[in-house]
Image (cartoon, rainbow, N blue to C red):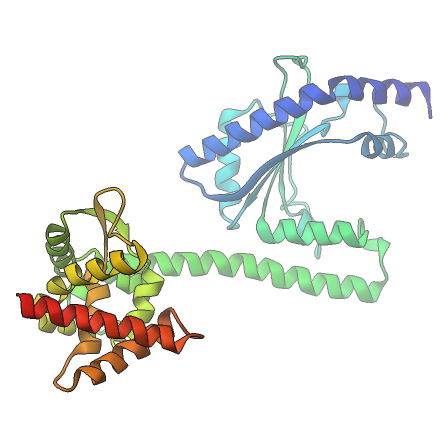
Length: 366
């Protein structure tokens, strides 16, 4: 080891604690900036280059460093996004907030060789001086998608550093996988945009009476519509709760409604019209029972989640029709077996029996 290398390694040891503190601080700041910009990312992390990694870097024949801050990646930050088009959005925030060294920064997405998917990242070098670090201190921030990050981590684990590092047959396989992942990144963006457009169109389609399959997006649109809002508000009034903004477990509601054979928005709205009065009367006996059985209340903050009208609609549909009380118990027990007690049919039957009795008692009292 040369005297220069030994001096640089010693200097690294001296500034490592300050770099760690600065990295944590910058990670929090960057995460906050992205929240302000409305950009949801997978992670924002930092790391300080360790002694062994720096030692390997210093002895590379294609590198030469005269002083510590010629090394720009002593401190490295990484932002991992979910979507490919968010990389540029994050880059815009970084350029606006940090003092970027444009001469040392690079968009590796434009320079990557075919098959080098994991290196299609946006790299900035920026000034990170301040506090215990000199003004000339530099750091790097890397922005890539989650798929690019996964690929790069696997490459690193395989020891695959350059195209010539592995046999040609393996390089071809890596290139095929890289192409598939690049396509997947693009497809995720397209799927996100298609779902956003579908969600935007739903309120109009529902209002126009279009035939719409009852999926989770359609369910949330119905919950926020006037019909369900009115019933939810009536339920809240009976329970002494104000209507909140969050939706009561949409995935659970969707499965519950499907179990009573409501599979389109049209079928759901027809059932609401038919059972509106029953829906509001079931709330009080249900929660009286739930409190006795499980100490379960509508809420702890005085608010009622939206969508409870559909929860009670499913119960009304299961109990609908003439027949023996035992028939109603069996229909309700079938729903609870599917929802909550797939491995305990006796518990499902017991809950259904107690609920049917609670509903009957409430009707007689009324």
